Image (cartoon, one colour):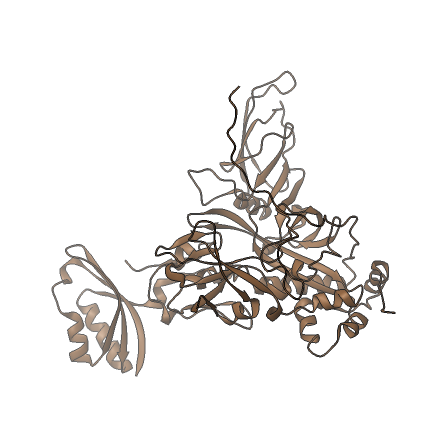
Length: 136
Length: 387
């Protein structure tokens, strides 16, 4: 069993299909919706945590892709210019999901991308503007 | 009779490479087993450091004279306003200055761009005089074309600082970072037991003329900082439990490094600059050894509600608690986050230690100590007369 987060971008024409139902029934994937933005007739974006057998998740992602859903691992959508980070800690103040934390020994920033819930609070909170999130 | 070391003796040992130099964190660890007398015997200098946003910072710039010359009476660097009331081509650019149309790029960013060797657009206007006939100039400058480029910061390195929380139902944006509603986070700013002015709380060795690490180069303490307050309440270890003393510092920006100066922009607040400061503290006697041995568990600070007018105090916590990841405020467990960089402060303390050990850096006795028993005036609003 593995657990992985994906960002799904739905084209307007895919809005009427029960895609997540098929993920659960046909591929035995446990899904957890962490964030959703749906604008009927325009677009939809979803942050989904998929838990299941690795091969089933791969098949499920393929199923979504076959239905014109852009499906990418969350970490590919989170951009952080780590080399410019000064480890001030401002982003950790707002990261209630616990993805951004300070290492208590080195006091360097640690970013566990798989804990991110795309609340996007770190984007304005970083005084150097080192975060970019590609959700929509 | 307790042993007393002089500045000259310590400098002699530094020159010979025989001095024992520790960082403030190292000496605090040593103090778990060693008495102040033993520490005073063994240790010569302790390095302290901080790397945090210090809004009261800026740079003096002399642009050089153009031909024909201009008396610059309005000046913009990359669109950021600079002070125009200093002769013809002298200016001062403050870290928080900005064009309101472009609030995320401020004086701090101009200083950083110059420091990194980038070209910056200078635009200046004058009325035109007999000796300065020109009325307008627009040109590119960089760190090599300007004459003096001096970092001169009126208020840096606060001795202790408050913890910020927000008890309201709305998120607020402050210089202490983004404060979540309902006290869901608490932010704190100093490097605790590594912080310069907390290791010499009575300012016995830090005064006018003290040589320091500033932005990666040697700099100096030139005066007490603004808002210099020495009569704030102190705890049993003699350390103020809220923001108290400050220093004003100066140094040559042309020798500094972007590694230790960083322009920042706080959402819905404005620009500021992270300044890297390291101060060596000579262990002259047992008393100084006791001072530098202070631990995070012995330094308290006040928790203030930044969401409520008058920032009421909600409690008091130690740096040990703050660095543990959460504190208790009014019975509620609150997640903590630093807003100044301890890892960078450690790097500065280590670098200054190396400079001292290699004989590259001499300690200096203050030419004059700071005033005592100071407090602050607030700004009273009286009706201005219309004559």
